[in-house]
Amino acid sequence: METSSKLEKHLTIDRLPLTVSPSIMKQFLAFVTKEFYHIFRDIRTMLILLGMPIVQIILFGFAINTEVKDCKIAVYDPSRDIATQQIINRLNAGEYFNVVRYLNNPEEINTVFQKNKANLVIVFGERFNENLMHTNSAQIQIIADATDPNIATSAVNYASAIIGSYQQDLLQEMQIPMQITPEVKFLYNPQIKSAYNFVPGVMGLILMLICAMMTSIAIVREKEMGTMEVLLVSPMKPIYIILSKVVPYFTLSCINLASILLLSYFVLDVPIAGNLFLLIFVSMLFIFISLTLGIFVSTITNSQIAAMLVSAMGFMMPVMLLSGMIFPVENMPNILQWISNIIPAKWFISAVKNVMIKGTGISAVLPEIGIMMLMGAVLIFLSMKKFKNRLE
Image 1: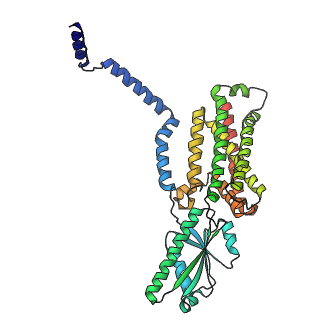
Image 2: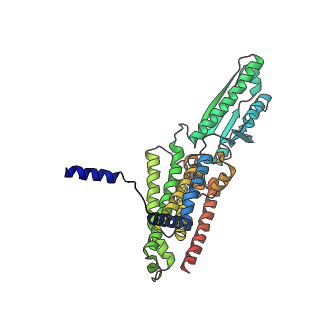
Image 3: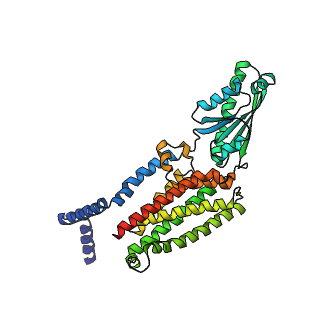
């Protein structure tokens, strides 16, 4: 009987409505308001929470585009007749291709590829229209720069489809079975291996993350722990303290560079067609720029988490999306193409492809080297100025 009454009392308590006193609710709202104040007061947190999604959706929406647009075409046309002109006009009419120059001799084909003046070269046979009318067949050669196999394959398919469409129109108009046979040649990467494209990109991504992120974290860690002030008041000059932080990561980056090159050559069968010392020099220059980026990040952040976020999100995503590592920069809106010009990895990847895959000399990569040197000088100046201001 006693047990039954206790059970009945317990059930009655459970059925009582849950009530919260006004004082507790007021305290809870005060804590919530305090958290909002903390978030709104920290501008970096606000940028990450509200700005990063906007930036990501814009980048992913406009940068991720596998279509081929404004592909640069060079034409070698010894015939200069009505049929070749009609085909050229069709290629140039759409949004896929842009005829940028006419070649005077076949020796210029390799030059326009090495100088990145064209992505595709159309070579017409001699007496093209005459052969088409008398023998009902003519030859066209499509030569593609296959250092980026995805772009090369898509461009060749588009060009072949346009030429096939012209052939079908001739067939319907003249009621004669005419055959235009495109001969496709993939230059620098005849087997269309994707490794030829992603190896330079992976080199840029790895070196950027290791040098920039790890260097910034190492310096900021000293600031966060309070030991940076102790180091700065030591007899050692500040520049030597910073260099002591940088040298180990420079050494590790050189080891990583050697590992990447060895694996690419012996395991992935990616050739080193150009000068090995020029390739190493370009890579060392990029490592130096990445280290200066890490130093600059350390001067504008005061915590390891902030340094990691700036390095990872601020460098990794632009390198992957805006450097040409995965998606062609030419397909992006103009504003993103302009932004991509301030990303060091874009110029590094372009130089590595020219030296490593195309086998070009130093004259072909002088623009990339000059731009990277200028970027390094600007980053050093900004880092030293910011570092001195912090000391004051």
